[in-house]
Length: 306
Image 1 (cartoon, rainbow, N blue to C red):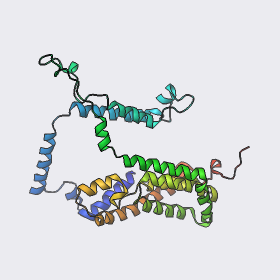
Image 2: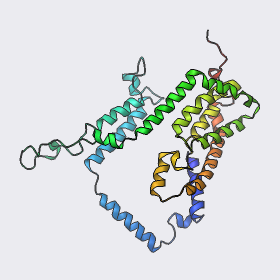
Image 3: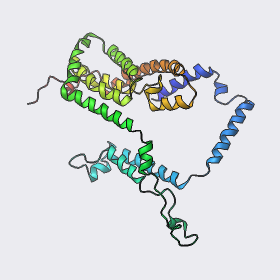
Image 4: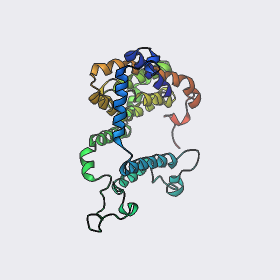
């Protein structure tokens, strides 16, 4: 990801600003327009004022959410979920933590309670009225993107149905003639396919649809499943060309006065560079880290259980 970040910056720098690094990095002389733009941003920043109680509460909840996610099952030591609740079965997942922290928004007040800021004014009902919570159901009902929940749920249901019905296994067996194709060529073609498909679908829907098929295909041709599944998962995030590919693209397209052709020009090259970067990582340090040249026993689909 760090390598791709540098490559993307270099390409966008070359496409829109040229290779004048001295001017782009702010080392050269600044024009009156640059100074005026800086002053406008500085004034807008001052208008924000100091952080409010509601903003601080949201920040604390977010930091606590990240800490609970990282410490639930860190891997190198037993996490708090394993020690407290998941001793026999997995009762607490990342979704459990997210739901619990979301409920806190309906409980935490949006203003500092009266007991923390002293008694001011008369003791009438108006001064002792409880402040509203950070979030209420009316706002959730109007602002919540319910279509994303249906999209993700439909993607998971589609993947589960394909695996349960045997469709993934059948498609994997249909791709068995790829056994005669070099492994790096298989991975490269699959990455191109995933990077193209994800421009018209979300990355979650793309991975849930293709990963079971790729896993079954790898088992049938004797290829390490991670050799095709790992780069495919990464390439599902290479959505740079179209506004509908991912929500950040849609936000930038709606507020940035962009045209579809502008995003397609820059995104097409970024997709190719991303696929090449993934292939470089896969066939160098990826092989050494995950032993991708050896076919694992757990991936052998012909092994029968006693």
